[in-house]
Image 1: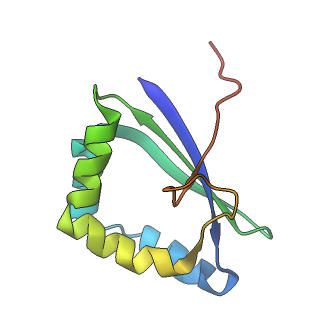
Image 2 (image 1 turned 90 degrees about the vertical axis):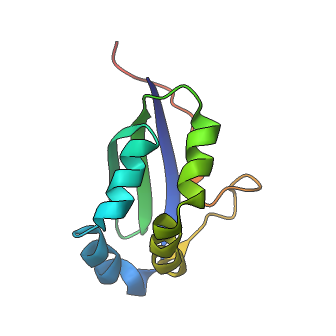
Length: 109
């Protein structure tokens, strides 16, 4: 199992809508998350900075392939098409990232 954390901005005028849609995530999206070997997936919001922090645990053997399968899923693509206009990616993210990856620097043994 490997842990992943990432951060992303959220447009201030989209906070209520973002919370609303995440209170009722589509079942097909949740199923794809499971199929992609992701567990304990959470998104936290830090206001007033309007930063989203994402955390998940990956239990598969090929993270890159599982993330590609998720990205190719049509229903997940529909979900992202709704979410992405609400989001504000960080200028400091790596090329090719939407959510900026973070380095884990501490975890209790």
